[in-house]
Image 1: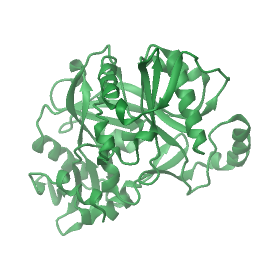
Image 2: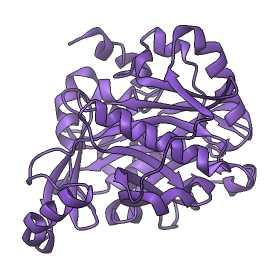
Image 3: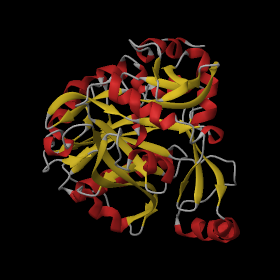
Length: 390
């Protein structure tokens, strides 16, 4: 096991080594350990439906290594039977990452990777999970979630208000685009220059990130010094993967290209009967029209994540130039699709009219046992979701 994986064991361990409740007999929650890694890899690959396609979001070869790109402080927990504590029945992650909230950097807890084995559903696991959350974390804790519209199981667990479950409050609908081209050609804006980031740019880029917090809420509080130091949060990225956009010598935009396939994959688990039937004809049409082609069942999708794709959200011409440049840079790397997420209140969504993309819709929500957390957030700021970290 490499050192990057070994170091994850410490943040995952809780002050409470095991959690039990009399309301759910025979089961308990414990921290995940390195020895659990391959069980977690298998469980996380449980398939989820989206637009008639069954997707498997994998974390191969190591769940622990992959989760360090989602969280700065992972909190990986598993549910097991008292008689077989080594056999994982369900898993979830309650880790945190530092984000800008109303312009101030704060840790934000993100509920991710909730998986329950198909053979163990309905056996008190959800009651145990909710009891843990209520009794082991502060009652005023705020939890962020992003759940696919088609993921009925997760929505039933987290979006149904009932006793013992933190109330949910929908913040936004969000769209993740897998962009493969554009409906029209456009010459680059000659007033913009786009170049690779260098180490000498880091301080200026960090200041630009802080400036972007004037527009966006929940933007990760990136410090690119961590990229240079090769911290686990930046796994799969190097400084050469980032590009700075300048106008008149000033930084006005930023983006990175993130190849996550060495540690995080999206596999086609299955197609609906209709899509299976039309897939050959669709792929022929897709090739002619620059649409996303559908691989065979069992294969992975080939795309790159856009990282920190940022600019003044009201400058849609600038954003379109950034997206066009990002797609061209990805194509130069023999990858013809890029992914990014936009919230419903993001003015940059106006550029969708020129995109050729497949989109997946999800619900961005917050949960709390006490007051409505949405009241704490500046409604004028735009929700920012980093596609590669959800």
